[in-house]
Length: 370
Image (spheres, rainbow, N blue to C red):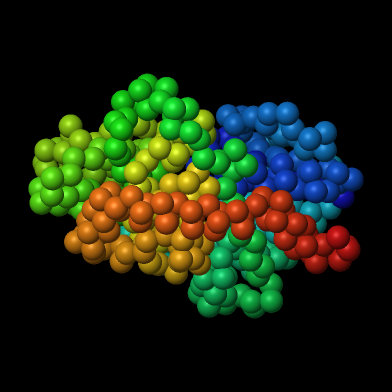
């Protein structure tokens, strides 16, 4: 088969959906060498494939305007694609072939206050249509499958769960191998790590308040390292840091490469991910794969992902979060316990498994045996 995947997430700096798109495409091409896979985008790719399999390529299509309405359907017809996979909530408006739709979460619909209004308006109009038009739908967790079924009125038999995985190069580094990254980024020896785009849904403000409590009420003086690009309403975060006088104990690294991120995961005292809502929760799992002890929110998708391998805290409880961080910093045996549990948990998730489950979805959509 000739299969197209939405390559638009690779036309900007990769975040969660970009990593999902790229890692899935690589794993699919490896598992199905007799099929051809194309990452399609109407705009220039920023993230390029390194040493791609011979049956996987990136295609920058010529027609850019009205891509999902006209450009993509025309490309599918002209190039005889057998299937298209919309990895980022979108599929062609006119389906010339079976279409698979990945819905990572419903935060735009269920938690609109955490997003820009223009994105919310677009999602309210388009996402229900996409879900109805799709041949099959993919989610990363059973929790999101249930939400999609209930909120968008979709038959659960149409929805498949394909858990995501840490990137293949995310594994523990020796402390000495992280030194260059830490020195270059200005990261101190003992630090708490947060990874993610700085935006309301990630609930960084609760972590900042907990961090302030730790500095005020204990003898501990860790550094808080925030690794991620600035997102919507970042001013609230920056203003709080200034007003509380935390600037000298907090390091904003901005967007970091996979190499640097692996070093930070491998050397942090604890990785904290207090998100209010997630579809899967890739940063905690990637941290676990690098041996980091993890504290995260007890929201359904995250608990489904991390199991009992992380310390779970209610996402808006500042005091409990501060207490959990203090306990982790003070007790080496607790850090060792969650590091070991996290490594075991992360090993259960692989992109090969994700791709195999995805190929099963493709086969059902095209009535072809795997």
